[in-house]
Image (cartoon, rainbow, N blue to C red):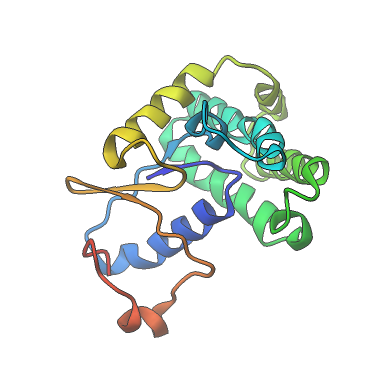
Length: 189
């Protein structure tokens, strides 16, 4: 799955896939990308462009974490980051980031700091947010995601067998009780 760590939809989709994983032969492999790079060169409204300009910070730190600890650390780091970012007291910021881009950027930085501490990783990895060192890798991941589903892509992008799927866009995680009502276009459920 190609995901932008600062994207709430990516967070929900990973929670959904983790819910499904014990019931299906599913190997969830995370690939970090950035919506800023995915949307490079597109005509966007000014508010969204301002928000995207801040979005690579989290993705850069995620790649630094992966570089230091490997893929095995990435899942735990995402769990800690996502819990701090998307389930903490950030609702107003997370769901209206265009109106509060500075507050959103601060919430991302706080969540990164919390995740680094909770996973026992060096706090200095947070400095990766402010460097372009990881941007080529992020761009390569964005390109791979686009090859799976086409140029009009965002996050998340799933790769199931040979099929590429942009989305799904979900507003909550389908849990066990709702599984029978969920569609199965790619056989995940």
